[in-house]
Image (cartoon, rainbow, N blue to C red; front, side, top):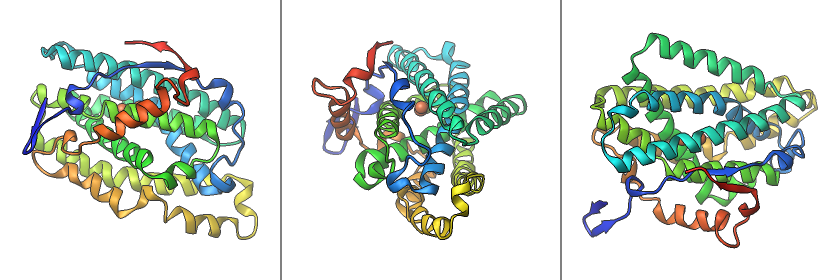
Length: 295
Ligand SMILES: [Fe+2]
Ligand SMILES: [Fe+2]
């Protein structure tokens, strides 16, 4: 239980990390080419670019955490690691389904998926297990930051457009928020260096955001819709104002570069409880997508 100046609160470090057996396959088969709000070109390509990176990214996260699993003695953290692995496995699987659908529609998602996998496997060969775990910790802070924006900002949710895309990203965002401290706590438990963690976070902040921006533009240039007069400039004006590229997100990412930072410094428990109910409670909108819980 984390303690604050005003008393004791539940933190994500005490949280039960539960892998839900969800499936969106039928709904994702209905996704149209420009699925984002108002059929927006760049917002659709940004969603596709994010999804394309997820499956291989999630598998990398699992490998880097699993490497240290035997060194974890705390039973709570051990259970959270099992939940983390279950959640990330399901995220990867469902995003592969979306990526297959988007590839059918002409997106380069499968090529990006393969390139991400090659890059991450190369990283694992040349860098130490600690450095690879630091990469996971940094990327987990990034996904938790984006997840929190999505869960708390109605405009960000509306920008996703098609209901199947919205459901997939909301479920993913909830679980990223639920397990946001797990890789971090493993890193700390095995004596990971604070200097390496901070440096890696800085590289990820610039590298990922720059890569997402450039990757989205490049992906859109493979789309015949970008040649229609006025479409690209109009979409670009909307894209640069999207919350992903806001100062707020940038500063939230930067917050992890302070020595002594912990993901629970940001208390998102109320948000998690609300969305768990909203999505998977008795009246939850995704209740029917769940075939059970894995852990
Ligand atoms: Fe994930
Ligand atoms: Fe994650």
